[in-house]
Image (tube, rainbow, N blue to C red):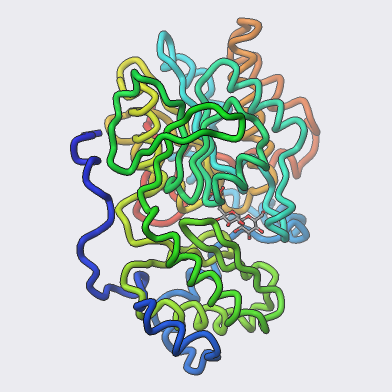
Length: 407
Ligand SMILES: O=P(O)(O)OC[C@H]1O[C@H](O[C@H]2O[C@H](CO)[C@@H](O)[C@H](O)[C@H]2O)[C@H](O)[C@@H](O)[C@@H]1O
């Protein structure tokens, strides 16, 4: 990455009104006209694609997984799945390829949080990692530099993970800490020295710092305008804000979408992105999880692509930016869970991390470790088998994005 170009603020100079997914309004207008307004016309969100995106935005709830397993048993879905797997082979079955490629290289691990380390649950405040996952992440971090890159606020995700030895990038990479060393090759205008909770000196990178007041303001308004929509929940992640509709009756989705649309329509410096049953409002800056990966590699002195193998494990659309960065020049691996395999993907991601550390700890061949871990639980369970097959190496979450380096 050309760091000289990063010395300029990534905030886009052009604030002209935009296309259907990049919307906003001026804050001076907003407090007057929006705070009490109920959405009237729902046509905006019907015709601009928001509703379609909302309907396809997440795997089904836990209770529906049984039906999925049954459905998967049909020949048609097997066919679809097999053709997907041909393009994007299982990360576990390909483990030895990855390790072969890592020979004499330094592995660096990047992990998404929700849906990757913790299962998707109805209450975002109760998305916890299992004890096994916690120890898998801890174990991996003993041997490889490990970073969490999450859409949540940095404080929130670091508290949920609870491991001080990791690097954390919150708000989709807009809030990063890394150790302050004189040798850090990075000098960015948006980097400041700070101290972490343990009192250690760190560098803090917050390219959207100027947006904090605006995000606070929009957060308060979104809370207000959605307060009568049962199940709606708004989170403030400091540099972005999330409007959850997982627990909202589907009949009310157009209403929640229109509320968000109305709040944003005169904010030209904010944009909307879609996550898993969540509408996310963020600054319109040229920064994403992919840029965060590059930034962390650079600032940790690990951007030497020939001696470093970055691996990114994620499950969501926002992770695609990181997959793209790793795919370029066959730089590293993006490991992706398919939408319908949330619970199992967490299991698979944990297994992958365990395999990595076992490789280092006992020196057994990677393949034998993988096979043992992969098949041990429920070896004869059809459901486990089906779910296991639905995790691939790379693969698009939305059309048009190819992920991961082939081998
Ligand atoms: O980048 P991530 O770490 O994957 O964070 C993305 C969003 O994750 C959280 O929401 C998602 O997980 C919740 C808990 O399982 C679930 O209830 C919700 O429907 C999902 O969208 C978090 O609450 C969001 O703020 C993050 O942006």
